[in-house]
Image (cartoon, rainbow, N blue to C red; front, side, top):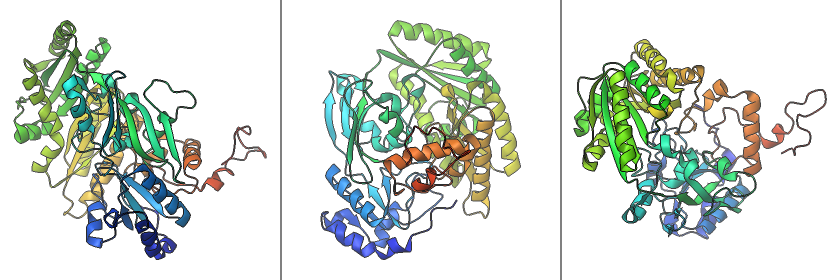
Length: 495
């Protein structure tokens, strides 16, 4: 993995940058001590480390605006960072760039039950939104496994999902408005407390843009009434193929559960040892199917799913009788990632999405790859929408293991694309999948995406080195693809 080489001119201006930042920020808001900087040198990907030039901790949108305007003037790169839970290297620092830490943006600004929405600063955690509205019977639907720590600004940047995204959608489907600061210091407001804003869909452009277009400082999201009833079915199978077939049968029957999660035998055993969720120890694959809504509907659909499970050769079926039991079933799934610590010193969490009908084929091929690389893999994923999360187990202290894990992971992502899927379901591209982008996108696709970046960040200073394997300067993009003396789409503006 290569990141942009440090700019010696920027390194030489570190003192000037620090002095000018301290002119409008408190001393504790500018972190330059080398030991303190180590806390910011990586993110949830953890395989790579790089100390930033400085860490800057603004408290207001006006301060973010001033910081970005100063960095534009001095040509300093900026890496926005929320809680640092990114699993694709999205918040990996740069040696000649500042980390813009948004942890101080932690206030809930407005709770509007009449309009079913909440406005928060970008550093508010995902779970805190639900906790703020729970007493009135509401919740925020997207629920990544890291929801206790991950922040809503990072969720917007990566378009995060979670175990309930099958029915309720990703972050982008629950997003109503944003306040975003552009690299030149301009403050942009998009959307608000209403549906379908006029004009171009800038919310759609900014959601999932991975910090390359602007810095999110404020977010308005939709909240939903808690369903009248919710029930989880825990179904064991003797093979991954039977479990995968059951997923296809449920969706094919027109049933859209709140979530369908699947775990293989290695993940089941690790999760059960970690938190004693009551998972059957003798099964090779496990499905968790949650149904919610009016009680009568949940009763009927639970029976339908149970019958489909039996038809697909389920070896065991358990239906939660209480909400406490339902949450205990989910506890094992939510703890699956940390549970891997008992099996291996390190794991590499992948993220790709495939058509549901390809589950059995992909499982078989991943088993072959596991034998080829000599590394175990545990599978935990959102089966309802085909979002895989293979966990490749390795030991970074063993020479060559990290490189093998990365090569294994790259082959899994290539496999996802080959069967008709995509490189990422919710973790983003970052640096992890950056060099695999040409596996899915043509050069024309990538160039057009970079034109969008140029419209927001013409200097290429926001989170460089992420997403695009080759980043063209904006002036170069205007000269690409001249054919017979003509540019394509001559009526469109050039950047």
